[in-house]
Image 1: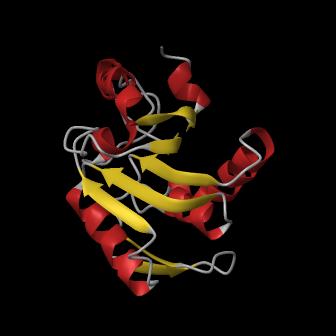
Image 2: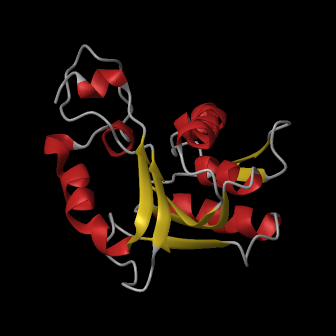
Length: 177
C-alpha cells in the first residue's frame, strides 16, 4: 500500500499496488474535458464507477465540478483505500462509497447527474497485447463486454433526467469490439 500526495491536488490519496493507476494519470484530462463539454453548471451528485482509488472522482470534487461524489468498485481493497482517503481528507460529508459488483448493491434511492468511468476496457485477451500480471484480467479486461452490458442495462434507474455520462476507454480496447 502506498500514499500519494500529488502536488497538483489538494487531496492525499491512498492506493494499493494492485489497484490500477490509470485514473491518476488521466484525472486532469478527464476533469478538463468534462469542464469543456459537460454542463456549464455544477453537478449535484457525481458517480465514478469502477473507481479504483477514486482519483478521477476526487478531481471532480476538488475542482468544483460536483458537490457530492459516489465511488464504487467491486475490489474491496480499492474501496478500503477510498474510505481511508475520505477520512484522511475529511470528506465524509462529500463522498459516499459502495463496495459492489457493478451496480448490484447500490440502493435504488441513489441518483446521479454525472456518471464517469474508466472501467476495464478490453473485451478479449490476446497474448501479444502486453505481459499480464496475475491480477491483470480484473484490472484491464471485460471479457465479452459483460461488465459494460450490465452497467448500461441497469444505469438508467440511477440517472437524473438531465444526467450526463462520460466513459473513458483506451483505443486498443475499442479496436476489439
